[in-house]
Image (tube, rainbow, N blue to C red; front, side, top):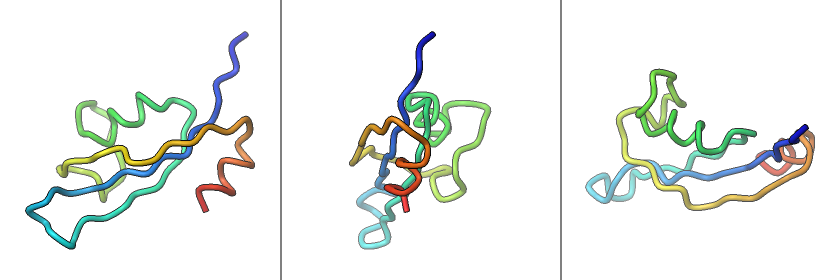
Length: 75
């Protein structure tokens, strides 16, 4: 049985045409690649409202062994 780690991640949302209006989105997941695809709009499942129809860039990533720890770090 494979136990997947939890990941906390930060996305830079928007592009340089938005200038200072770029935002940071923080989340956590066990299925990192699937979640990034959801945020990017390349899947039928929706990502967070803030990331929809906007360019995203993964700018931070950290691995955790438990949901409790990853949730504390995300906060």
